Image (tube, rainbow, N blue to C red):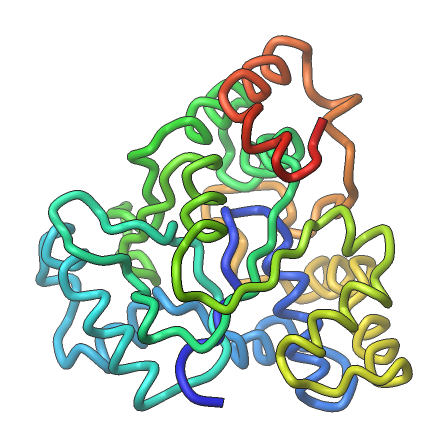
Length: 278
């Protein structure tokens, strides 16, 4: 498979679950070591990866220079190190740049995972240690970025996420992409069927026994138990909440107060309706 095969999503939408499934599936349904095997579906924005293929250290660049360089580096990675990668970037050209971080000509295909933004808001708050109000604000912020400067050098280069609605539509409406849309809620409701569709789209073994083995190896309880025993290096460094916290759908109905729920519906109602989130 040539080019980049992307697992794209707004943060906290189920990307890590898909990565765990694929990490197992690529090894015949073997158990997954979170801190080792997930590297098989690495983060395209990883600083080490970007530095190596760009031939320089991104720490020496301004954010604008990083935004200009990333499309070129994506093309190099697509040519020199093709495979599966996770991305949280939106598929839009950042301000002052001319093309997205992952241009279409570097992409083989895209799996786009989407989740009800009301559940995303809760997960974001726990992940980053934000209030619910701050989480809702960030989801409406078209300037929202991750991988920015912190007290220590970030393991990733800067990624422009944009708002939840803009992120979703930047991928779904992009021209020239071979894309599979997966709703997190559908993955939970019928994992056998939806993960079979995923495997078929990726030209992987889609037989029932093979999919079942990989699903068993990547069950939420298995991943959460492993994190509890050995930790998970992708948990945000300032957060006290586990990365694998609940993993369900519809928790917003009991966990989200009316005001932020109404704000999310006001900010994202059109795109929510498009995706079947009433």
